[in-house]
Length: 248
Image (cartoon, rainbow, N blue to C red; front, side, top):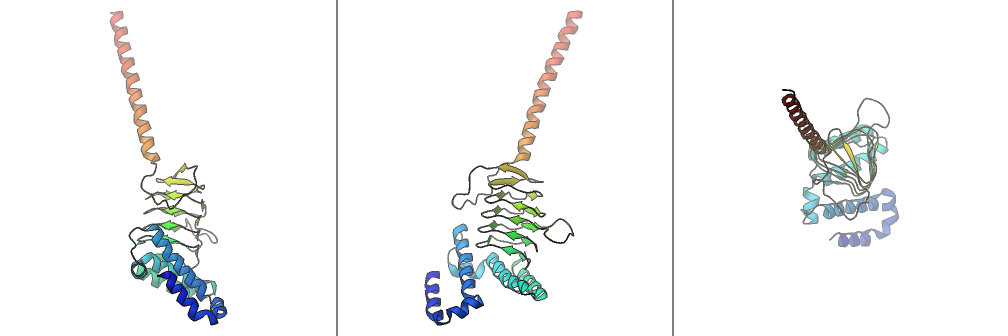
């Protein structure tokens, strides 16, 4: 269906293609196609283009951002914020018009997502509901995270501060990330703990459930240490009783 729409667009706009390119219409249409394609690639619940266009709040938020971002770059700061806030009212997703976002960002469900002014997001990033890409203070300049390519940020994660999330990384659900994450890594916990992964992203891996849990690993190690100390204490008690018997 998208291919037929593209063919019709070329047929009826070809005589005016140079003008449309200057106005950014063809580029905008291409971006919209890529945004829709990203949803079909990463969301098994997507059934038709019409359903996606009409019902996906994440898609509406991205399109609203693209309008507000153009206004922001043109110096219409107040109008850009007004468009941004109206989009937030409609979708529950707040993307500051000053943020820089790459191609094929997918915001799944999206309620409560916040993306700050100086945030930079790479290509093919997936963000789930409740995610915050925020700052940690009132400082001016760059104060929000830079997210690399092919990154997955799972439900409720908070990434706070000006640092880099490396390519092909995963941020686990509910994590609070306060420091830089290397490429091909997984972060889980509060504060976020890094688990290095050697392989690069292959295909479209959206598993953000089966992640390592360093907190649980630490608790299990403490339990093993407690059991060992108990055994040693019991051994000392038995030795003491034997010594007391031998003295008597």
